[in-house]
Length: 240
Ligand code: GLN
Image (tube, rainbow, N blue to C red; front, side):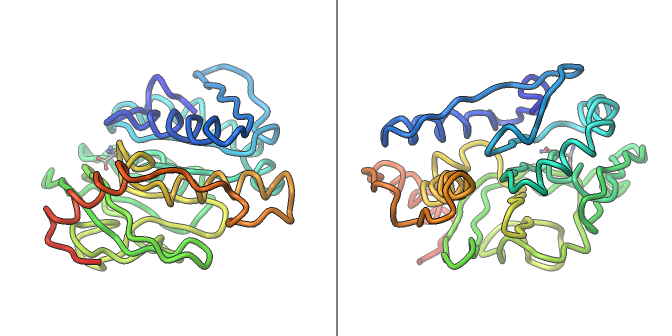
């Protein structure tokens, strides 16, 4: 969604990785892009993806996103998986108060809300979290850069091992309710965390075939990916 507006740190590259990992396994994968004003039947997809963006871009796209609320709601009711990064994550909550004080109303699907604070301080840097995706424990690494502090998150994605996460204080990161996976982790989230992208692929296939199991996914050679992840873990002095 809004790949040409919400693509900080190459967030849409996550979809390229998802597509490549499907291809390697002979799984059909078609990715469509959505621009402002373009009609879209969200329920026709197995996955919706929205990346991050600067405050200005968030203000800009909200006028297009808000009228689509019912369509997105319908897609959720039909089991469509949703992945949201940073600015996209914020917009699914109650509201986002940007650094200049502008209040952006969110889609209000969830109770969390985000405020940037007036001091322009930002959470920037590499981050590692310990997450639980359904029954799977995963250490996830990423990069965050946000002014927004997200609070009142009922179901955090994981706890922070190093970095900031949802806000300065509670050491929790992201949101995951079994269907919507939202995170502050930008850029190479899927490239550096093959377990996460495979989990998303599994959820999409399960939507089509409820008896599909996580272990039914053919294993790929992830040597390079694990090495890339290890580099970040070493840099953060984390042993797992
Ligand atoms: N503009 C938002 C913030 O600063 C989101 C930024 C982002 O997507 N990286 O909090």
